[in-house]
View 1 (cartoon, rainbow, N blue to C red):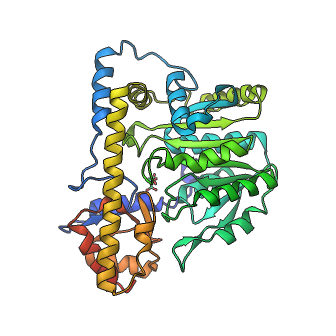
View 2: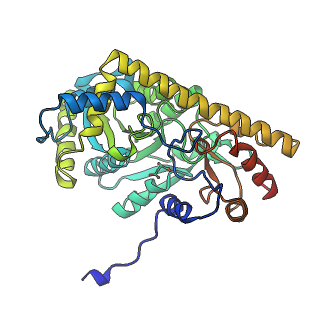
View 3: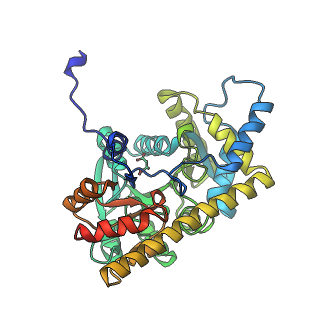
Amino acid sequence: MLSNLKPQDPDKILALMGEFKADTRQGKIDLGVGVYKDATGHTPIMRAVKAAEKRLQENETSKSYTVLVGEPAYRDAMAKMILGDLYAPERIATLATVGGTGALRQGFELARMASPDMRVFYSNPTWPNHTSILKWMGVETVPYRYFDDATRGVDFEGMKADLAQAKKGDVILLHGCCHNPTGANLTVAQWNEVADIVERTGATPMIDLAYQGFGDGLEEDAEGTRIIVKRIPEVLIAASCSKNFGIYRERSGILLALTSDPAARDLAQGAMAFLNRQTYSFPPDHGARIVTTILTDDALRADWKAELEEVRGGMLRLRANLASELRTLSGSNRFDFIEEHRGMFSRLGATPEQVKKIKDEFAIYLVGDSRLNIAGLNDESVPILARAIIDAGV
Ligand code: LMR
């Protein structure tokens, strides 16, 4: 039976991780997978995470099953962090999931249970796993214009025109902040316009919020999501703790379903519990418990926020340095978009041949679409990358 299986195309980002590991060249630089690294190339455990883990180790008395939809304290703390003053438990169903990817998958499943013929509108480009999961689920997908190759900013007119084609029963997938893979984001005014269009179409927005705190700040990065939540009665939000808590391998995520009334909330909550039971039963708890410990303790929360700000500030500084280096080397300001982009990523706009040249000749790994992970850089590698970009003819 198993010999009937067909070979699967490897995920491009994860395959690049493997390629980088196997590269024996000294001084190789990994700007591929979206993992934060400090100036020494290490992905540290955040101070508050370490402290919370110590506390858990001392105080936890049981490893028995938790709740099928995840601990209420975790779901409340996360929903409050994402929604701020808009947090209204009577309207929200919540589900602890296996990372942000689990939240996306359960969100797509939930939407399909409610709307079996749904189409999912996704930004072109988007995180490759969005479309890969939807394809595997057999869901029809519709790209909407997003990135303007000429300006390296958002093609907002194109986006609006394409989103207007959605209808009731469809899902519009939006990146809440720090767009992956481009780094180009909507302004507050544009989020309001997107809310207008979503409202007119009657489609259901689903927001992927994987990088809250990595762009303009913890509150600022939730602003687009909150604009949508304020205006639209039904919204799905898939969030991740991998990046902002740096607990990648603990696989902690959450799905929020905002509904129009308590009866719909109860239906959604029941369906979400069912989905967890059908896939992995109880969600992982350790990472969720770390997050809860941090978010519900004033001192730990303050320290976590301070460290998150250090991480964010470091990425902004690297962006400024890279843009400045490229300004000097190119004698132009055509790379200034790197400084304007936000989050972990920027799309350079290099061709696949140029990306290959940068890898082959300089041992610098970018994703094939020329996405670079800013957090993979440090003061030494910024000039090396700038030189490689210019030499490759970008
Ligand atoms: C990325 O885009 O690099 C991250 O979200 C990691 C992943 O799972 O692809």
